[in-house]
Each structure stands twice: as C-alpha cells, then as structure tokens.
Length: 91
Image 1 (cartoon, rainbow, N blue to C red):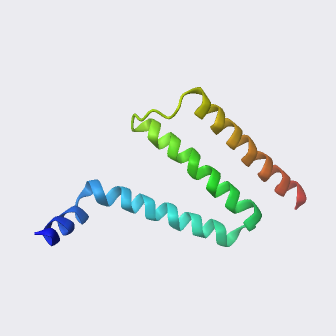
Image 2: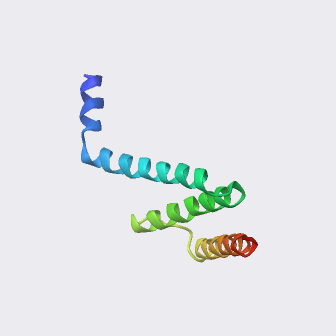
C-alpha cells in the first residue's frame, strides 16, 4: 500500500514539475560555481536564493512581510550589484 502511494506521487505532475525545476536550479548553481570566482559566485547565489524564494512565495499568494521584505530585497540587489561592479572593475 505504501509503495503504491509513493510511486503514484512520483509520477504526478504536481510533484514532478517542482522537482525538475529544483533540479535545474541546482544544476545552474553548480555550473555557476564551477565557472566563476567563488568570492563572487557564492554570495550572489545565496542572496538570489532568498530573492527568488520571496518572489515565488508572493506569486503563490503567501504573505512575504510587506515593506520590510521589499526593503530587504532592494538592499540585497544593491549589494549584489556592488559585488558585480567591483569584480568587473578589477578585470
């Protein structure tokens, strides 16, 4: 009985689509880490993970925290921009 439930949920589109999207994101993360400077890639990937989580949460109708969350996203994007700008100017 339990095996039937597990195997039927794996074949379900409701399970399979988010799983595949998550795996694509993980692949992109590792490709980014392999091809760029770690001092730049790790902070950007970790910061963007928070941003994407908030954006997807809002798209799904969750309460993301109002003005403070938006201010946090703006500060995060500003920090990422500063990191990218400083690394580009070095090269």
